Image 1 (cartoon, rainbow, N blue to C red):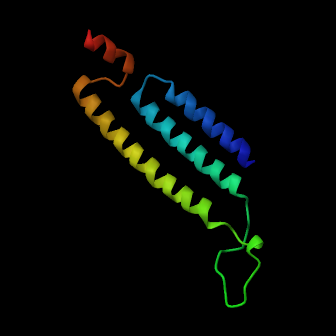
Image 2 (tube, rainbow, N blue to C red):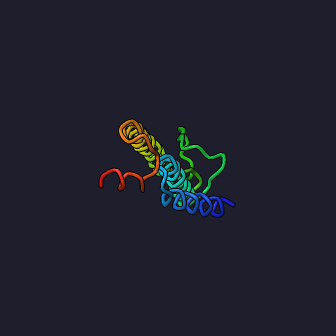
Image 3 (spheres, rainbow, N blue to C red):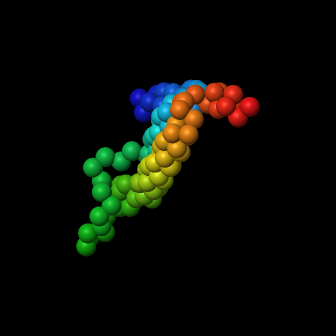
Length: 111
């Protein structure tokens, strides 16, 4: 089920990236970043109910969840949030200068 969700998110993200609107470009970046996060999550393996806390009596490390993919996903979320914020700032400046959201009209304005 998660693999199907990753496929839908990535195909929707690529479709939105290929549209002419800047807002759809931002939505495509969001969908693709979520697809990548889910891919990292699935590749790490799903371990339910086994936190990484080690007590006095040493537990079997093979039964615990790996914290590295979780840290990678958290870092990827922060980076994608910064990328989306930067892209939205560019979209705001682009729209205030050109009064359009269509990227093809920008080529006509330059000529």
